[in-house]
Length: 276
Image (cartoon, rainbow, N blue to C red; front, side, top):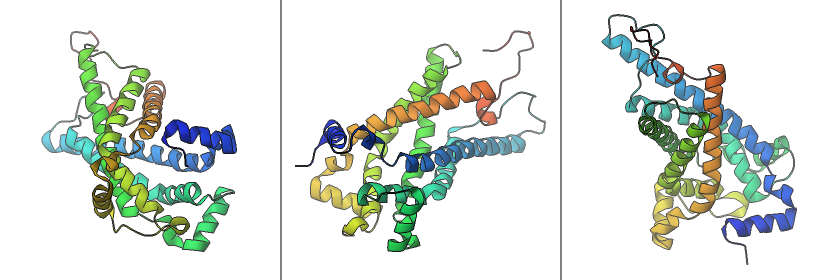
């Protein structure tokens, strides 16, 4: 009987492959995650800044004060999240598909060897299976995730009298927003995974698209099946997102990394006292 649950699967992997088995395919994961996160964050900041500056120029006849960052609203953040999620997904998607092949079909060897095998067996289409569904999911997840973090951070700052948040606080808020976002998008994530693995390693092709996959899943196993795997997802998402937000906040503070909308500082008050 195959193991069930996070603990059961973990024990099975350690028993069959040793502790190193928990990190199988880690090189491929890093090759996918590093450019994805870098593109996602840099594009998100750049689009926010461009939108805010364009609005500022359109509504003001004078230049903004020196040192004052452009103001961004919820709509700016949504648009920035959509653009960032789409661009980052399109760039790294072949690696996403390759990761699925390694996990599902049990491919062994180097990254280049795995890519050659997929190309030989499935052609270039093997690197773009389920692209439309994945872009839809990533766009929603990115837009919701960034906005959740922004709104939760805003509420938390108000609760602590406007104090600047530490990198650890940004990380914890980011992890919480990641869990909430994962809960909202879990049906999409489950459907995207099924679409990507169908036709792999002899599996039948059962679904025509994202909506059809969710509809069939709910009809056959009930609506609760759309949220299956929630606990392993939370166990992965919270530390992952918390570390990304925490490290990013620390880098912004230490080296000034980030867009104007995040790193800019308001001008000092005329009374000579520094603002918080």
